[in-house]
Image (tube, rainbow, N blue to C red):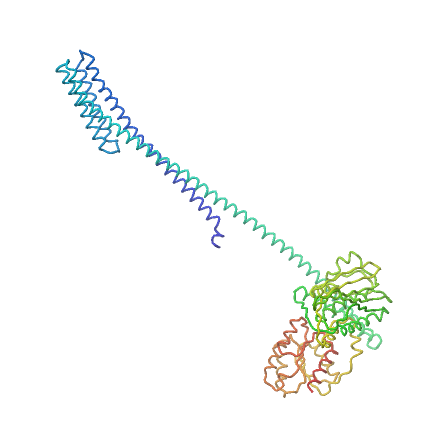
Length: 624
């Protein structure tokens, strides 16, 4: 098939040429055959008929001798004899010619010759009787009746046989010529039809091929446009990300420079560190948002269905938002109506992220002393499925109609006073709502505030226990400005007597880790790659280390392989020693890979040390 597709045009041309040549050959054959038949008619039936007609004429002349003899008393017998001999001689010549050209039954020629000879003999006999007695006409008449007339009839029959044979040959040739003519017409029609079909097929193939080429060209042009558009979007994305990253980085570098130049002024240093912390949190928020957008665009964002206690989740959400509204003396109110379900199944993490993004924007762009409200109501219930409506309302500065058209586009930010974000929050929010099978709408006017309406589906669970720890963990992992709250509520940690093995290839990160671990009583042993950490673990007695903090991407041996080697080493504590991944790899698949390698927990950088200490406290207390 591939061969036919490649050489289709050549094959069609060869077939057309072959058919044309065949048509020409067959036409020449038929014409030549018809010409030969015409020549045959000219050489045989026509000449035979011509000779026979002369013989017949001479026989008619002989039939006239009897009346002449009977009507004239003084006939010139010698003249009549001479005429008879001449006629006989001409007939003999004609018979010789007939023998050469006649292609019918040869017995016809023999019969005719015999009849002619008999006729001539009978006539000459009658003439001899007449010469002896010219008055005895009765005798002459008897000879004519008994001898001449039978021979004349035989001659007539023989002549007619030859004429019929010649006519038959003519009709046969005519029929054969008619058949050949019809065949020639049929061949011509078939050849013409085949040539027409092949030509039409070739033209149709050209037409289809042109259409396909145009289609492929359009696809390529569309792909080129899409690629150009994607490249432009990528350049714009990188430009915007670069700008957004440089803004907090500029603040961090600037405040660090100021702090270094003002080492004797604790107030300035304290102010610089506070601003560095704020800029760092903004930078971390930007990185998290970029990672979320990347996961959404790659189709890697996942929605989980877990059991959670809606009332406890709502209580945690309220505490987070109050921590943001309090400094601006804003009122925050949650109004729940027609909703008494307590245990739900759904993704509480994504739900928190959606509402915190919208509520944080509401507090950010609502002036001092304004109000923010969250209305929650049940829309409908179908079996164990429930639709919940969340309405977020504020009396802030609002948004213009022009900006609303681009609200959900990445990096789109209105020129509004009161706060600055990454420009990714609403794009992430809308995609998460869609992933959860919900809908989001917004109503806003400049100077009149904003109303967001989010409808989301959940499954009502009758299970007696809700996942408290899961809910609280999810809420904290996407808090906005809640680090201060967590710090205020956290207790002090004392890990005196515990020794940990730290694997980290970056010197600064290693220094920060070591100082922070030692600040809460840990004795830290350091390794600069996975291989070194493995050697240190194997060289010491079991249970020397209370835990291992393992970076993932390191030279010589990465953290995954080092963990697998430790788990498979066969030491008494190989399967039980806690190994925690501390890595910049923050995607869901990275967490999964850490667990598959044998790690107990996965924490993303930058490290939340209070969360790390809380996790270590939980693990080590269990192991006691």
